[in-house]
Length: 197
Image (tube, rainbow, N blue to C red; front, side, top):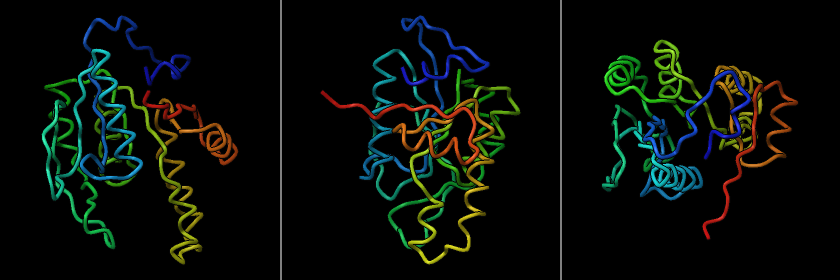
């Protein structure tokens, strides 16, 4: 189970997998989009569902919607400049707070650091819900690629401030975990993507 690595943090989740638990998974990318994050989160959500977790996906509407077995909370979004097929979610603190008051999740996992991620972090903290995050994309390293090297420090501080508000931040490999710890990220754990046998 994904959160087993966070058991030594200051919160605990029930360990009886026969009891249904609920996770709110906040993301800006989801199938049928084809990218590493969408594929990782899709496998994660399906795996959790097989282990008696109900998954509520919080995400912006996509140009093409495909039904699946998970509950979806669709929030407003806009196209990402330069990537018209992808959308970023707008802040929806009130919507998230109302929804999570009515359908309270056991945990909120945030896989996006944009406005939707910040809104989810704020709503979860207001409702005293445990929050975990995942770090999938090295945005601060892409600054140089997009000729925005001058912004690298600002982006790095932004990401560190965001992730350090979570109970733990999950990365796909130990190399990235070590780098993030050296850069001042707290409670970083490695959760490998695994292999679909």
